[in-house]
Length: 420
Image (cartoon, rainbow, N blue to C red):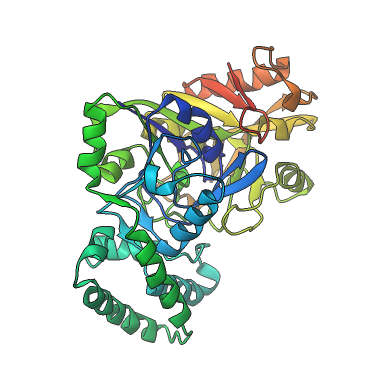
């Protein structure tokens, strides 16, 4: 049995905290896609931890954490994270497992990412420059190196072959930056990677499930950044939606039970791309300030705006979301008036559908207004009724999307989650 937690917006919904909250009810936490461009922020014993590659269940003792084959892995980032986690008393060699089919990000992937983005000029997509796109390109181009390859005696020659291929591309970009230090760090990290539990991932996880173990699949980024169904071309390079669980872990669709979608009480987006409800004014700045909306991976200020119900309902549809978890409700505590987008106005016509190419058109949001709740929601106790205006806000979301909000996060703390 597999339950899924994934983001319903453009990422940064607070999925890491939600996975951490639900992890005690599962035996296995598995990451099924994405790379180190996704930062999941956790607060453990009062300390802030940002995980980019390791599943968010790592701080729960005796839980198996799996990095699946759908992930692209940066060994350097992984080693750095493992060192930080180990410093908090967690034995990663005991409870972290990595699928052999997991693709590796090599130093020249990072160089290609940087060179490509620079070449785009004003048309850049806002890449985090971590090498994710080029790594997935090598995967689909059947050139990639995978974790299982590092145990092969011919790995070095395989690496050189791939590096020469990349060098020709870099020459075309006139990229001359010296990456020798990146390579030295990379090969040191590979030696560390060899000491971890490298497993035949699909057999490993299916054998665990056959023994009755419960799996929590953890998504990275958000559904609106899916390579196929997101706001293309301003998307990531993997399938962030629930379908990616099957291809990223090697499990059958019939194993999936609940799909828990995480959404903020408003919207944010990092990088370029269409964002119909974006607020480029004092209200947007206030959302950013109160919500501390800066990228966990890049530190970039996030673009902020009102809740987009058109996109949220679309996300619920393509993921088969069975319940929603609303985060950062407390950020809206101070606002007199709240708004939500219920339709797009495109060329004078209203629509409740996400267009094929949202980036090519001007979508003006049709907004519904709601009174704020003027309550310090961070102080709400479990079981206590929500402020009436917050209840009305949530009920409107439930009815529009057709999926219920079952939990509300009312602060950054591990236990600041209210079941409804």
